[in-house]
Each structure stands twice: as C-alpha cells, then as structure tokens.
Length: 151
Image (tube, rainbow, N blue to C red):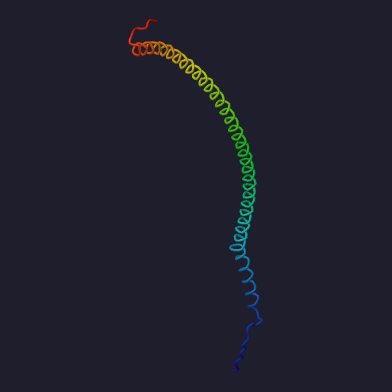
C-alpha cells in the first residue's frame, strides 16, 4: 500500500467549485444583509448632514439679516433719542430763560417797591426829624437863654 501525501495549501479538485459557490452565496447574503443597509444608513446620514448644513446656512443668513435690522433700528433709536434730548434741552433752556426773565421782572418790581417804601419812610423820618430838631433847638435855646422863645 502506498500512502500519498499531498501537503498543499490549495488543491485544485472538485471541492473548489463548491467552495466558490459557497463564497458567492456568502457575498450575496452579506451584501443584502449588511452592506446595502449600511450604505443606505450612510446615504441617509449624508443627506441629513447636508440638510442640516443647508438649514445652518439659511439660519446664519437670517441671523445676519435680523442683526443688520436690529443695528439699523438701534441707530435710528439713538438718533431719535439724541434729537429728543436736544429738543428737551432746548425747551428747558427756553423755559429757564422765561423763568429767569419773569424772576428778574419780579425782582425789579420788588426793588422799585422797596425803594419807594424806603423813600417814603425817609421822607417821614425827615419830617419827624425836622419837627424834632425844631423842638429840640427851641428847648436848647430856652435853656441857654433861660427864657421862653416863641415860635
């Protein structure tokens, strides 16, 4: 009896066809079960990411529009505030001028009244002093002369 030993990694015989068919069936099944769903999920993820990027771009452009609008409104509001402040300062200055003018008139009137009162009091005091000085001078002369002096 003879022992034939073949030590080879690949032996070409009838089993290679079975192995080839098994491999092709395995490729078909793995393609259906694993690769196609994985490719579909990857395609969905890519589409989702692109949609998100598009939405982000649109949101950024909308944000820029709103930001510019807010800046314009802020500038307009600042201008209105400055104009209003200027108008209020001008109105306050005018009102202060009116008040100052009326106070000056009142002060002038009060001054003239006080001067009139002082003049009246001075004239009364002069009259009184004249009378008193006459009476005093008569008494002094009477005392000095030791006799009565008639007026």
